[in-house]
Amino acid sequence: MESLKKEIEQVKKDTISKLEGNESYMKQEARSKDDADVNQLAEFGKGVKV
Image 1 (tube, rainbow, N blue to C red):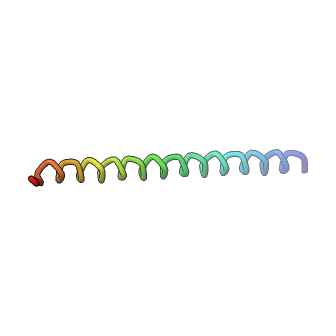
Image 2: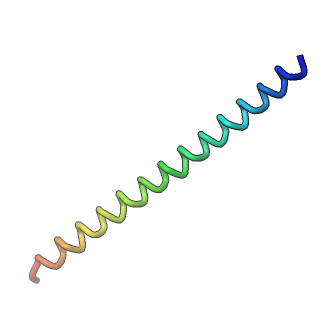
């Protein structure tokens, strides 16, 4: 019974760290997408003559 509890705890920890990893990956992706959008706007802005 004790080893089962330990295994469950380990699975919980693994799952939580995977989820946290996914979350930071998603944030990273969103940030790089925002950067790409900003760069695209900057490039577009250079082409516009007022």
